[in-house]
Image (cartoon, rainbow, N blue to C red; front, side, top):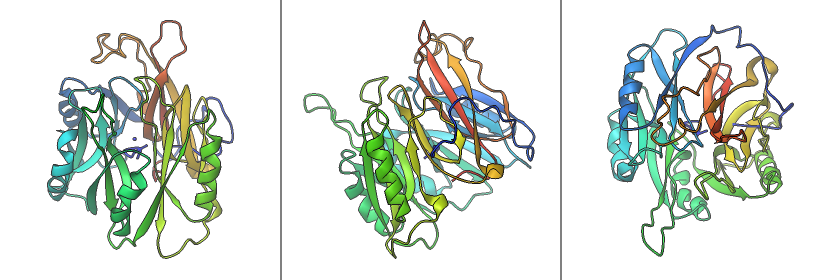
Length: 350
């Protein structure tokens, strides 16, 4: 989700649900929700796009993903969507980008795993994209190094690596990396943590970003269907020099049970029974992160969902941009999932 980008968090000024009203600068905009099952997602996204909506985020942490689509802010632009099987992305992405498509997210509950692509009309300048394959997160930095040296920054994990069973079924991970026009050569590092509060990750990330490294991604691959016990943060910086970062550039990694606070959300992912978040501080007027919570009932959390979403009541309007949707198994009697919708003031996206 990075959000597509993939997707949150900083030293959080407060924990608990923030109930600030949507930004006064933008009227509340309609939100719609579409399950990513049975090949219907592309049709639903395109149907919403024709009505002035745009894909905002794809959930992370549910057996079957749910896409949030939001009415556009200002005069609507034309978008279209398609899904491509993840297994074909390493060979196909270059041609897709040349045709105007860019990756916006992934679905893993549907069969086969798929990459969600978006194309704007008129075409937007998206720069260059490259696919990088990697064997494991311990070798990800080495795999990314050649692309980083050409100015590419990792933006989205399209497929998680899988070691296979008894030597069979092994698949490599796939990262989509993007390069802006005139980007300088970069170097990349990957920091990991597995302690409950991620103190083994938070301090190294803060120290690295204080030294000029910049946040690219946070990932928590599944260790079991409902467990994420390791967090990985990908950072990069220009080779021109490790100039000290501004105070606002220092990234804080934390693990609140409810992910919100004062700061610009850079990435968020489920982690153990909480979330891992990464944020940078900004002024209150432009950077307050708000959240809304919903509960997805057990029959709706199956893949495909069989409950008709009777027990799912997410927000239907939002003034701020939806930047991430994350979920974790609920502590409620009867199970299901707690769903967290993360929103930020328009223009605050990384």
